[in-house]
Length: 458
Image 1 (cartoon, one colour):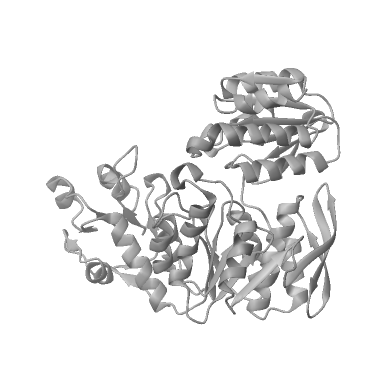
Image 2: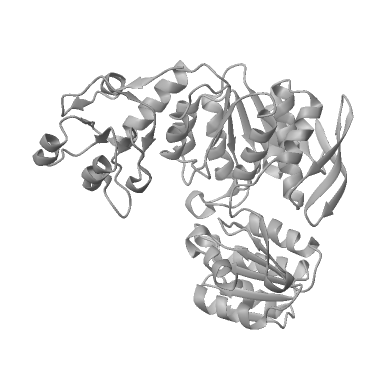
């Protein structure tokens, strides 16, 4: 196991030691002072709302072994905590990227990287569950998939055999940065949809940005793609790369799902490959989880995991919180909490799950989808069409953009539509109208804080 010491940080990051301690080994790095454990190295990162450099003393008081800063602390702090190791670097974020790159290079293990417009986190959870049947796996926590989260994940490498990481992006160049750090051996593309289309201008540009991941792919690496996605399918037909593995439901793919049965608490299907046919059970409902499980099966095959272990890994996987989290609340009411994030593709998938869940009335509480730019109105209106197509009984919308959802739903003849301006208003409305056996979907971009609705109606 490669260890990071204060000396390593000074050398790799060209840091300057402001105190006298340079012998310590660093077990863990933490950016949030509330999560500091004794022995952690605090990372003073400047964010949108606060500058971590202003909380160095708090971190040290909470037990941090030291701090990496990019602003010189007050001299009183340096003198007061002279036994700690305070290191100043040019840029803290750049420093953790350098350290993650160092640790990745020194730990010569396979890295599986996952990107896509939707499904990254659930696919990561499934892939990790499959690989864990045979290996010790490090995986991205939650959706730690950006220029800070991915390095922090790799810095947790210890005695792991494989790492499974997400790569997210909002703009060109962001995945290029991540792939140079992670140097993946397997590159997975779940789909190309409309997330962040407001920043990138077109789905074609989104594909281009996602494909930056291949720049860091090992020369002997493998690629896994969803062959049912139109842009990925077209790209594969054009490039004709020998290391591409395809999966799908409708297209001719190397691994294909057939005879799919969607049930309340999961799905069952036959997986067809050139070698054999396998019976697969997925413990979460929805066609999109069939896709995710197909992808996980392919990943397991690449690492030569026996089929029975792959199937077991799929059947046992656990979802990250707030993603298709199904709860029973009072009066036998079912709530599908899928409130972590929202794009047109993920809302469409969630509405299909709502439609197929057995119970009473189907109620959708939908909020704003963000970062859609000039496509904002169009894509919210398309969600309204999906509400009608899935025969949802009752719709509650929250937020200005979401009014386009209710507008189209009304125009298409839906009667039970309510527009709300706040979480509190929506919570009061659903408490007023919900009844026994109802199935309620919560779906919106994360900043809408839709999980508070669940808290208010529990």
